[in-house]
Image 1 (cartoon, rainbow, N blue to C red):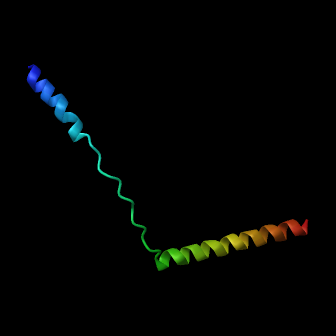
Image 2: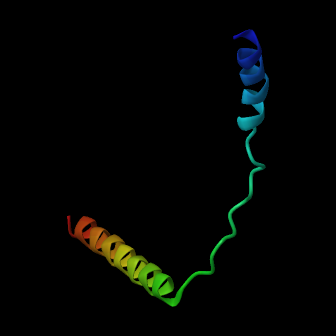
Image 3: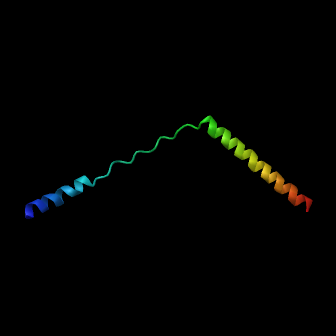
Amino acid sequence: MRLPLSLLAALTPAAAVAEAFQRPIPQPQTAQAEISYFVASLLLLMALVAVQWLISRR
């Protein structure tokens, strides 16, 4: 009984060894992402202009 438990205790840390970290490879930006970013930028700019217009009327 003692031998199997000692073998199990000796072999368990070998199974728990983690792999080396592999950095993710960044993907290129797609045309759809560029269009979405451009539209979002325009909407933000329009919102800022609208806020400025509302504040200046006051």
